Image 1 (cartoon, helix red, strand yellow):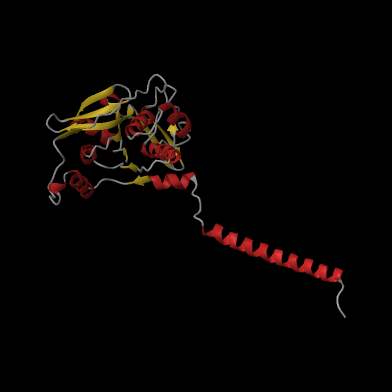
Image 2 (tube, helix red, strand yellow):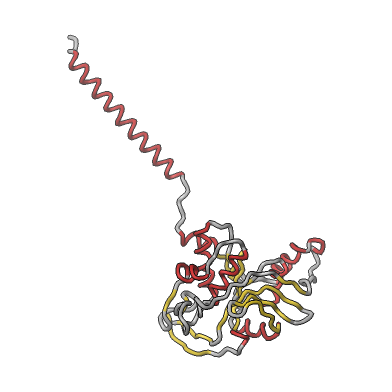
Length: 274
């Protein structure tokens, strides 16, 4: 007995529906596999972590740097940096907008030198994490606000994070090197390679002393007076001087011996970006 036309049409419809369902399921499976094969998008924090490099320049690192810009002397393990070198740097002053903003202003100079349109106030307002004295550490936050006189400041890890956040937003192919712990003389190899370095020192190289102390998660935090940040741009062994781009005073020349003492007193903090 043959099936009626209506029954045949019904079965054809059912068959088409089944085929459509199978096709949809197969498509979803293939799309899922395709999505799984795509690289996972990194969060900004993960990108920042890739940008920041924690390192201390060793004698071997310095030697490698020296060999890179004086290739004919490669292999000479007793090679020293040139007697003097100076990098031309566009000066950006922190005042009047940022009376306590030596760190972000120095960072703005460094980023501008690298060709990025970094504004000191944008860095301060939008990228610099801030906290209160007695509640946070200067290794994690800027204590106070760069726009307010009487604020304290921050240390290298905060500026490294601030720089990495800005670089991540601009998609620049740069790394932030936190070189804290490196001897000042070793940083001269970077200067000789035309890489300016942010360093922590004191205002006018005044003597620093501990002022206030508080506890953060069982750690004793002490703030030292006269803390200041500048960009090291030159050195001269013949005159025993260093040249810095100072966000308070512009281009300044300081005695190398005293500058080294102040740099050491401020825990040998240094940041280079390239």
